[in-house]
Image (cartoon, rainbow, N blue to C red; front, side, top):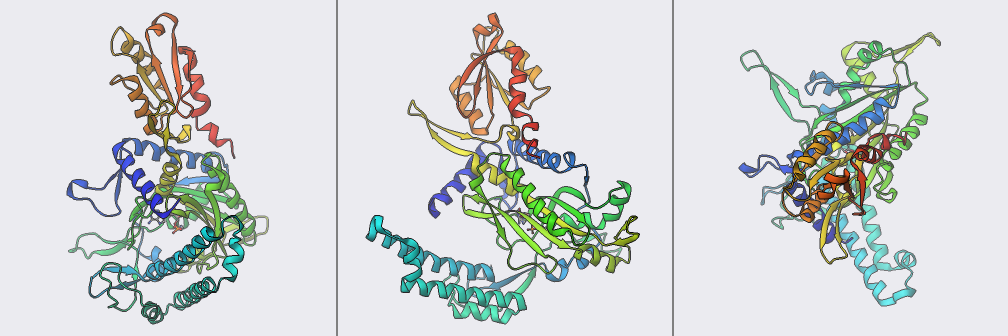
Length: 515
Ligand code: GAP
């Protein structure tokens, strides 16, 4: 897909989410708040289903993983120990003319993207010129202009990396000046110095009169798990290797929050910290990489939609890290992180709190600070991944078009819609009877308005895997028509068979079997 088509797709998904009650902009009646979103009736159901699937795959299916629900507010020292107070920063630069603020690294990356697009244009031209005989690999490695562009990119990346690693903000500014980067809004090169900007939101605890304390809204759920390590380990009588899983809100004052729900300031994480004996972390790191990819693949969105991206530049606390990237409408981007965090967090909390965060191994008769392998996925990003893969515009045989969300049936907001063919002759009553029974087991909808074709389209648009239609014949033979969303195939089945038929494909069990 071209960049323009990608943008169209993301715009279409955003519009679809609003029209069908998945996601609304926050406080829209006041013109909205940037990068904050509300989940509507269908969105809330889908989000809950993703959470349920993740939680069951992690906690229910693994005897050595237990859950936690820790608070968003934590003692401020937590963030000192974790390194977030000192190091959770973005390098920012302001343009003095437009008064706009930018992430310095993003300005440089956008500049690199422009050079990359020059390379693509050269390749495109040559493809047209040489046709079938064109050898792209050879062209890229021998064409003098392309070689020059690649050298430029390498040199820029090396300078930026060195500035980041040394925390040299002057060198960062000089890079922007040397590259003659202009403000995308004003075209001006009148830049301030680069400075670090902490991404944590702060607020005050207690009234001013009592002497208020600055506290932070947690930027990751993980620290709630680390500070509770001993509480959970002792109360659940766990011994390494064991994990603690948690789903909860996290907050980051992202300077450039964009691309719908991809980068938000308030978002939800599903994290699992796995505590292991030092020295065994690489084995578990590989294990969790593999397990998490299996979880993703079980959803059937296509194995080609995912790829691993190993981090070359490791954070100070990590000895291995990678992302699971997903092919979003704007290209492959991080969906989940898997990090081998060593004993950095537990040791830092031990040092600052003076409390032991260790496991006593009775066999070895010694205690140690466990190493940690974490899996961390953004719930909102997972939601966007599902919608981007599921959203399809289909041309039907009769020339009409339908928009269908081909969501994994077990995650769909509604599993079944019950539709009386017409709204009289006892059909609504019979349909209600069936609906009342089905809703005990399934998230179900009842819809008697409009022509049946329109009602099918409405259900397709929200991803309902099955529609049950009740017609005059049903009153006589107790059979209904069941229509499957993706194939649109219809067949007659007994009313008593409906539950069993649904159960086979919408039960979350069908997904959990990957484990
Ligand atoms: N505890 C590790 C940690 O927080 P991270 O890579 O910063 O690692 C983990 O975040 C995941 O959280 C990301 O892979 C992404 O899915 C999600 N995430 C991070 N920042 C986000 C944001 N601003 N908006 C939405 N999701 C975000």
